[in-house]
Amino acid sequence: MEVLAFNICGKFAHFRKFYSNSSALTHFIPPRTTIIGIIAAIIGLERDSYYEDFSLENCDIGIRLLSKVKKTIQKLKYLKVESLKDLNGSYYDPRQLQFIANTMVPFEVLSPLNIRENNNFVSYRIYYHSKTEKNDPHFEKLKKQFAKGKECYYPLSLGSANFTAFIDDYSLYSGNEVTIKHNSNIKIDSAIPKEYLDLEELKIGLKSHIIQETLPMDFDKERYLKSHSEILFDLNCYPLSVKMKSDYISLQKNSKNENIVFMQ
Image (cartoon, rainbow, N blue to C red; front, side, top):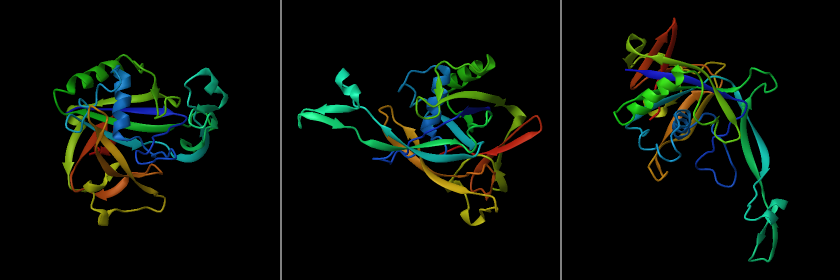
């Protein structure tokens, strides 16, 4: 079994909640559907061409929050531009025979706690494992891409296109570096699907800030949502002390150990 892990960082992030409507609210961590888009951008897959190849049946994806983040709300004015005249901050409504001002829309933004410091970023660690022959070529291509360095085929972003990102670190775990374990009281470093946990055994420390979010997991080829899941993680970046109902994976390299589960 092989697991490829890499860190992605940026100064700002926005992962729109799929159930939000009038305001653009954001998740604290990228959904699985966003992560497969990041992988597709790294290896150069065309937009909307990869959803089935990266489905839950074909690959495993995990996520870990590496840095403390905060949410702030900004007001944005979206322009409906159909002609040069619409660039004045309003658009012409033929039904009312007049220009209509655009509405200021609340927009949540993720940023590091101390954004002015040079080395503070919104940072995540992504875990990727291929399960089928349909996904194997993409996994192998990503391995080759990282072997050449941290260059990406397409520019990366953390959600919104203008929130640019970069790859900070990557590791390939294989052989004895990957161990599947079962049903233990253990500290899990990654975000965890709620269904995997015995919630009565969840231990919450004094410095913990447990977050539960509903995240989209899978698209069909028409980009319609197929499934979503309840995910738990610690906003202060501490591992969760839990009793697992399912298997978890222990990754070990250079005396560093990580216990993770994949999103489902």
